[in-house]
Image 1 (cartoon, rainbow, N blue to C red):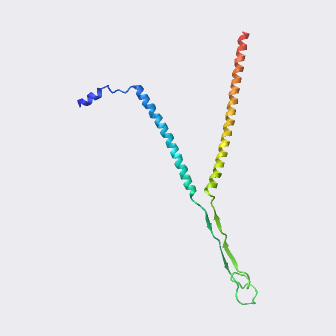
Image 2 (cartoon, rainbow, N blue to C red; image 1 turned 90 degrees about the horizontal axis):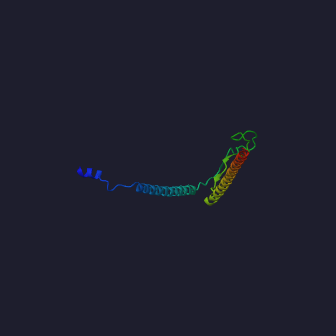
Image 3 (cartoon, one colour; image 1 turned 90 degrees about the vertical axis):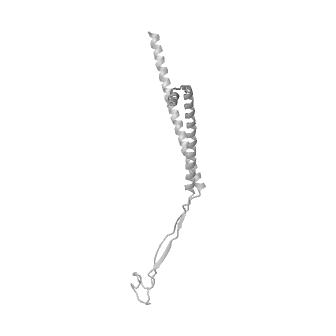
Length: 162
């Protein structure tokens, strides 16, 4: 117990405030670099996962079918309503069926090129918008400078009159 009290009162290994500030700064810088690296790694992994999902081929096809019903009724020369579904004797058979269906997915390179084009168009639009905003800010700043110079000129002329 005496040793703990002695160590508690010992001030030989005191950390100076400058050392604490330097260690804290280095820790913050290291954390900033680590967070940036982690963000890059997460972004890369999400991109790879997106490419993997895009790699699934969703193409399909479903063949159609056709059936006939009714057909000819026997009995040769009889007229009127002799077929099974009200058709005439010797008339054409009824038809039923579905059309074929299918979808062929574009190759990944084609859809990636289309996405790249859309992305570059969006970037160009964003840059154009940013340019217009900067132009407006510059015009507003020039207007403020003009107002300031007008006020200064008015103040100087008022002072010279008095």
